[in-house]
Image 1 (cartoon, rainbow, N blue to C red):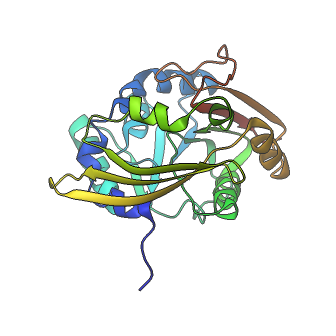
Image 2: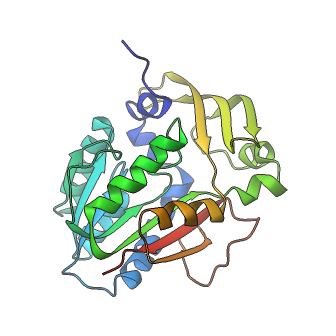
Length: 257
């Protein structure tokens, strides 16, 4: 039996702890930005890729939008369904691999936030398949809004120092850390506490991208307009120019008619 990827292993037992992470507290502001980008049109159908426990999907559904959330982790989806029921909203949560989505020309907008699959894959080809699959799920003139790790940051800063200073609140411990400038991949050995109180040991592998790479990838998929900004927690804005101080970049791409 093949070994599960680190992100699948993590999310089998991390749904409750995930919702306690500091980066999940910007949901309302991020959803407001998404609403502005789609002109507050409640008739549009939104796809949330790598939806996790459904924080963006549920908030958008609460605001009156039709949302489908997909994730590879059934444990995360189960938590998302529970939260949607508690919130009294309807969201279609489906288990699916973002590299092979069962949708064609179905959605008006797609979101993929906080490394919702993209950046986590083991190879660049796998990451590209996610972009390709989401693109196929969008209608003509569909808008794709996502975040990814900003490759400009590690060129100017020590990622190790940043991670140690900004660790989550859930007892994370980095045993080993490295960043490869040839591949723009971060490799680490991470130990954290799962929902059951037991330690989870992971060997992570995440890909950072520079703006020119993202632009080229999206152009190869036919996007007519691509805008990239700095991703500020809970405060996404077209006013935030991407800099070397931004750990993540915010990408907004639009398919041609």
